[in-house]
Image (cartoon, rainbow, N blue to C red; front, side, top):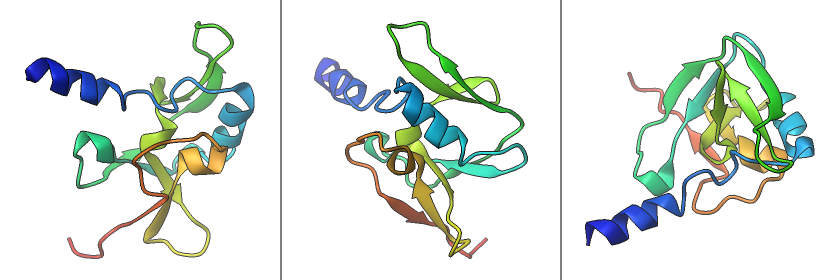
Length: 117
């Protein structure tokens, strides 16, 4: 049974970590140093987004075929599990895969941060 669960989790891994050059450029254009992004892997069971302050951001090849990746703080991120600010509502975050037009499954297009602390 544990083997089946491991395979199920792996099916969601890296949905939009290896992407096209165009998708990488689109994603990087929405990120900047000093910005806060939010990581949330809904298929993994995450319930609370993790805030990550961006110290560095870049796009480049991943060393596999012609795929590219987006690197935040020198780590390749999965756009499917990354959310960024929208221009209209500071509590609403939009999925970065959606913005980069990378098809992702079982993730919300938007998440809303609670005002409670």
